[in-house]
Image 1: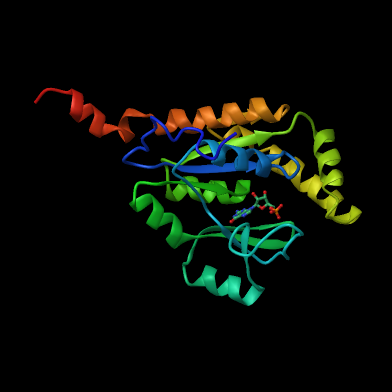
Image 2: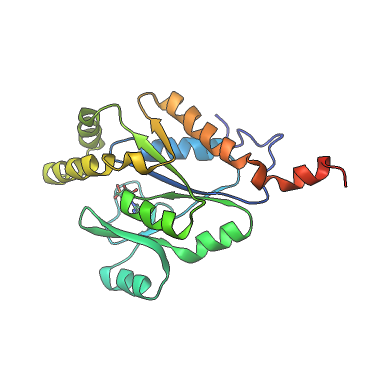
Length: 213
Ligand code: 5GP
């Protein structure tokens, strides 16, 4: 599918949305998000800061900003993070400025963060739209984590435990997407984003255009 799936006839809203997407490791969230980004123009991915090391295939500034613990703590203590959490023994946090800048320009921002971070964002941005990506079953998580081949058995076991914990918070989210089939899940997530971006409150210029007076 082309990178401009909706480019023709799609006008991004005046007021963008802040999307929070969570899902247990192995839920297929990263693949799903990449596909939706190819389809929906005007979405900006928030690149988090993390103290975990870079995985094969990842790049600085694309997947994460890789920082050491003192740097992370300085960012956190300086109020530079919109939210942060400790996940799998590593720190992860959302740099505040790029998010505020993008929203200020009317763009939409997507945060791929865990449930602790999502709770903090709901507090500071009550209008944030939250989506949880579900795996078909807990067994699927184990299979997908193992298939990734990047982590040791010990790390996989820990991630599986954490994944189960993350899953128990799915009821706090606005939307649930079951990622049993990637094509279906892509369409559902895309549909959620497009519906949210079509809300009248984000399209008041169209109301004015078609309303007399
Ligand atoms: P991974 O190490 O597999 O890239 O990510 C592990 C978990 O950390 C995922 O659930 C991901 O959503 C979460 N995560 C990534 N960035 C952030 C962040 O900035 N803040 C929070 N709270 N969680 C994050």
